Image (cartoon, rainbow, N blue to C red):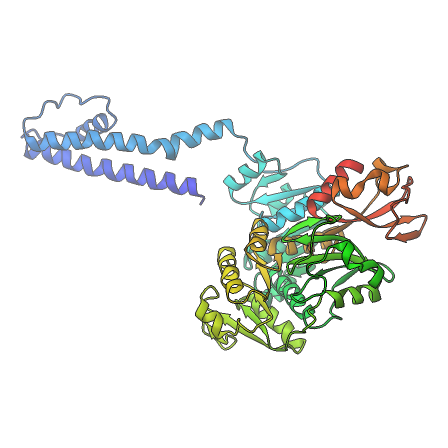
Length: 541
């Protein structure tokens, strides 16, 4: 039952209760106080006339003060009930009259992706699908949400994703994939319905608790994702990279040509220098294609922009070149083992500690709940709890907190106690990533972005840049730039994207020169943020 239906039921129950009470009192009063007993139906008529302010019938006037007080109270109550009806019944009716409602079925759509439920991770996936011209339909069980999505321009239908009939109306028989993301208990039911409608459709199910993954597979899921577990692995990977220069999470574009991100540690020789002063390409052979400055991506970086402890370099090159660059980003005085603090011991935090243990790195955990895996019971926003966890001498802290507001506050507290510590943070909402950077975090990963990109990689059957990075790769043609050189097209300055490779007649050119001329049929590998990729496609595709 949605909110509007509940309010309507509550309102009608209130009206019936008030009227029934007044009828009983009025009938009693007419017999006792006025000495004029009458049938119950006459009392019902008088109460309705009074409450609705249409008149008093033939009973007026009343001689007793009790009846006059009662009739006055009835009239006032009628006004209150009428005004209460405006927001509950009248205004919603007018809103519905001027607002389009989401349909209960879709037509003329094939080779699409069916999304069961809508949220932040589906928003990321929809952006990826839209960029590649892949159609989708959201099956939403909440009518108000479905209507809002429909009026916002989404392809959506109102229906129960657990229903075979609703999935048929979503044309699941002709779909390429189905994403089940309602909740851990509902998703298996959705999968069973999907298999009944289309046994061959690819199904992906999301689970909050990794321990329930087998149930989703039993129900027919081809792929099961635990977004929180994936996020924990990515956060832990960044922490492990602070200790092990070989722990480079790179994405291979061509044989011995990768792209990777490198957060700068406190004490790195690059801090305080500009890209030109650092001579990175000359010293390492790796090409820096962009830099994250507190969550803001610059490609190419401004010549006078200086690196600081919260900068993240994005570079391409061979494995040896990236190894050399990684060494330059590390602190010259390496951290001691045992100086990692993990705040928050939910699914994300437990995954982080598991990865750290596997890498042989010691850690201290802090969480409000007392359990065997928690070393310090306390709030990560409280100075005393942070001190007990050893934050003053720690080199890295991983904030795996379930609430973004708490994470932002904890970042302020940690940065005050230890200005040189490396803060790796989880963000649940994409819009809070920039806030965490401004609060002082060194590296932030969004749960929505990580899980959304993993879904896109599976559904599109192509590798989008690792979910642990903040960029993505697309392989595309650029008909709007044919005949122009990369410098002439001015791709980096116009869009913020970088062409990291180009394939022509089966031959791949990595890190093409600015003089490289784009020809018809060339396939470019372009790296950039979501926004910059959109600008590139609008300008050249």
